[in-house]
Length: 343
Image: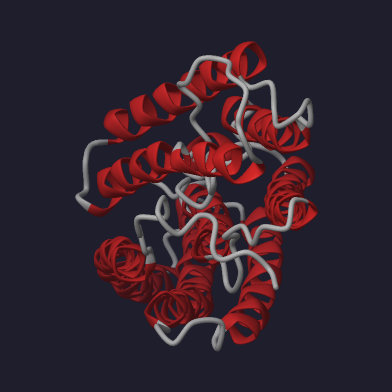
């Protein structure tokens, strides 16, 4: 499953020039800005691998290629970017952000497709994983904002207006929407495994945790619903949350009936094995009918539920892809990187 790591990699630079002295700050910053195009293009290429439903190995290969390239960029920056009149502040700020991006790619903080592995962990580790991802994503985008502020201030220091990011960050928004999807699917994966174990206590424990995440997810989607005019991704998440809520209510009740009748049938079987009483046999036969009915209803409902879930999740992927396609703007920033001088 090709899952959502695109929400990173915003504004990373690529320096390919040899070390040189610049005649003025504008020439230096323009050269610095020119190379942002390389990263924009790489980001667009990576995003297309998600949008066009390329196999997961292609997505993983893209990530590995990107972080190796970022390592090369940092080495090249140290060697060739001597700044403007010795001022290497912009270079160093970028390299710091670059290193944070590399760290996130390597430590799998942004890996959001390991449902099977995560669902086998205990709840303490599952929740810790959720929390760590949310904290790291928030910090990463906070660091991006700080970098953008520094870039602006660096330009103003030399009486230049440097183009910098402002407004809603589509990658950050997509990250949080994907994190909602991820949390629900990890716990649903665990829940579906428990339905096969005939352990009502563990099943109910999982439902408590999952229903807590469902409430949290409703709250977060409500907070984000007006962040973009395009509400499609938020809406599909709301639909997914409602689906899981309905699934948990209905399946649990049907499973409980099936589970209870299974126990009752086993007990009654033990009774008639020691007695040939006609009434006991009749009671047993009635239980068999009720059990078979409850069993058929439960498994038929489970099957229909899983089919509907698969279809909804496929629509979720399509919606996420279209949202990115429609809301990422890959403009050519080179000519506009530095605007007119301040008066």
